Image (cartoon, rainbow, N blue to C red; front, side, top):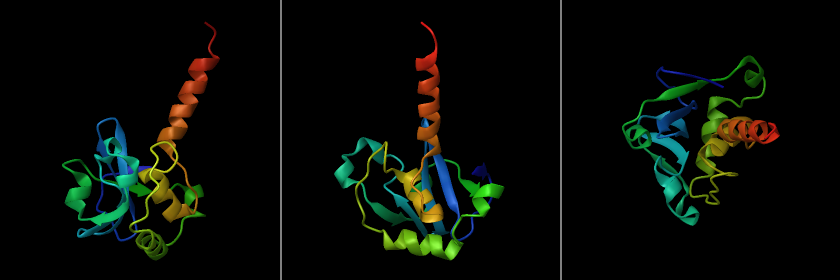
Amino acid sequence: MNWIDTSPECGDLIRTKVSFYYHYGIFVSEQEVIQFGLPNDPGRPADEIKVLRSDIYTFLSGGNLEVGQPTRDEKKTIRSPKERVNIARSRLGEGGYDILHHNCEHFVNECAFGESRSSFLDNVRVTLRHKLSQPK
């Protein structure tokens, strides 16, 4: 996924930078963004974090908006904008948050591709493997 500074359309994957990580959501309108928790929720108890809707300003929490642009390969598997929104709405109120295995990035990728994945965590794993494989 490539991330650009542009105006989102219904069904777009969006994100905003929160300190050292990004917070992700599905854009429906300026009055409705569906997301797994709020940008500053990772410090809250996991059982309190749910899939919810907010307006775009609450989602951004003062940060900048980036809109996901699927790569050529991702365009082959991404669901339609309407499907993404319907899936996201069907999950409102869902819990089970886990910062490593079931977070806001996993949520938007499940809605968009039917696959739970996190590029942030994939990059952390690659970095750790690289550091651990270096001779002492």
